[in-house]
Image 1 (cartoon, rainbow, N blue to C red):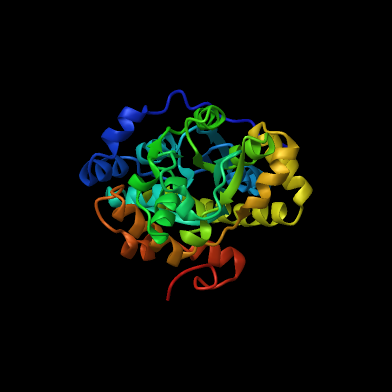
Image 2 (image 1 turned 60 degrees about the vertical axis):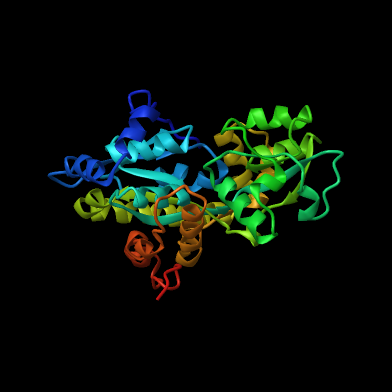
Length: 337
């Protein structure tokens, strides 16, 4: 069933988020003041209602009786990052690239479980023949600048010998309804979109899939993150979260009908759309470090981070909890050794 959610109107604004993320010293100070004197009996878990993060919305089905989880819905990744840094939530479902940006800003956070890979489609408006990457030259291609799909698209362009200028690279923001309208009216020729919007627009006949971008970039998408101080103070609670994520992931991966029905209720999209969308979403609690390092390098190269934090990922990807609850080695879970 769909769990109740906690509104986040009291959480910091995006402007406050930028202030919080303005420097490592400020971030460390904020986090240091949030240490808990005793183990938590209640955890606030922030996540958006998207198919990639479906497993997060089922964790309460598998938590021990003595531990309560409050699920908090977030509409945007920036707000999720703000809430994590400020301590408004204890645990958050975010994109790998947000984890990389947090590390770049000096925020002491760790990932304790993966969530999903995939979820991207580069769609081209109907009636426009694009058979290979060279055909995109001179076309207007839209992105949600600063998103996973944006980074994937930029990596794919580079691999195929193109630059943003070659394709009239255009930021249309995170509201995919704007991308939809722009495609419909012929204002753009292509868009790097996330699910389930990409599947919806294809089913409506407004566009077709040109690429998922994965083979030209990376597949990893979401990860579960917490502040290092919270993890150190609450290892049993974090272990319970990791265990619940493994069980909910296995549950949905083992029942495609439930996966479609659950994500349809979660997202508000029709089961027909979600049946297509979940074929392009891979729920996965593993944390592939090699791919994460590739993302870190790209995020730095494209100017979204001041440094390449790839070397820090060896510490920031904390496999200890997943290893304990699955019986698998860190290497089997994605660690580079």
